[in-house]
Image (cartoon, rainbow, N blue to C red; front, top):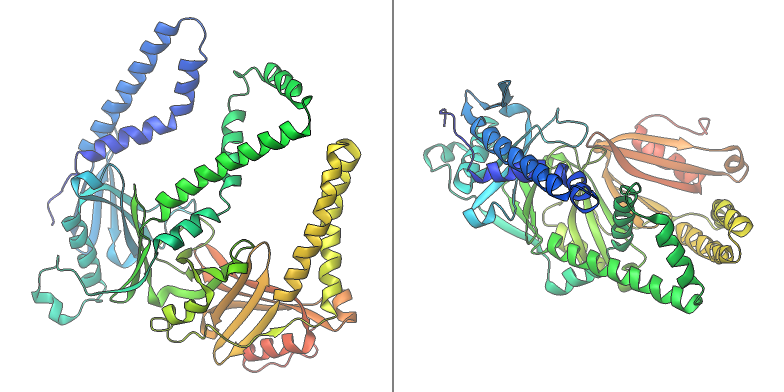
Length: 483
């Protein structure tokens, strides 16, 4: 595979669509809101689109890749020729996806992740369209270069598929429940608002608000119906989006990796090496928790980077919490998923409720002062905040099971984090003046994950419990005088 190869011609189309996507908003505004001179604007838009298409084709023609001397070598550039050599030892993972462009031609898109990938979450390199056999050859070459393939593999066909073990596969019922309770309606509404704000110079806002004010005069019932319809449509869009995103969600064990595949229109694949797993986290949201459902994430120091700040990868999107140990225990054998946890003491409850009261004061006062009578609805924030604070108190807890530290805490989501002692990068004990008077302290632990750290913080535990956790981690020191 030392001869330079081009990507499939579909890559030229992908390049064009990517460039068009970046100019979609200005082109849309130019065509729809351009006013007079519509024919000229239409011709201009056509020329721009044609240039983007030619650019996509030329970019495809100028892009080549090959494997040579233990490196993935990529050459690209339209006017300036760029050469990028990526040694296999720097590659963390090769993750593939099948989009609507690749799937009809039996192709995949391969992302190359390295330890030095961009802090913006970009991959080190992307092969937009290659056939599956080619992708398999690259993956096998990577394994052989790192010595992960056995000697017996040397004489076999590198394209042979390794043995797979199905860890988890989402059922239709779980997929529907996951999509229905994803909370994506707020994201949809925020995206729509952000898009509308981009058009503030071309939309007649004054006329729109004048019409809206006329509708408001029809009464609160009309407003309630409009709000319900808006949220229902946003929920429906989020539901459909989640169905497409998580369809056929499957987790497989392949050699020393966990391979996650998901997606209907775009089939994506993520790789999580077992030796890169830093911690396991179980999350329960307010909608799923009453029915006993939860999601599971793994914190990974490498493999498939999900975003710039963390490598928190969704492993089990939704399942009964009682089944998690049965699903994961055969593969993550050194984790105890059902440990006994010590809760926060009763006297901590007042502190949790008081913090909840303080955080709700400002959001309540401002609407009450400046947006009456609608501002009175802000009073509903107080009971919700106190209820959530009580849940935070009830869910706070910790536990030590051999070489494992378990922390349980809540924001809007209830989180239970399982961390092995040799993976913990930081464990700190904190105590404020008021905590000292109440003989309480806060435990904060973190493992290395992605470009930062991830872990958990549990506030207002017994001081002696926090000391026990610190002594368990510090090996030798006693900390009676530290807090």
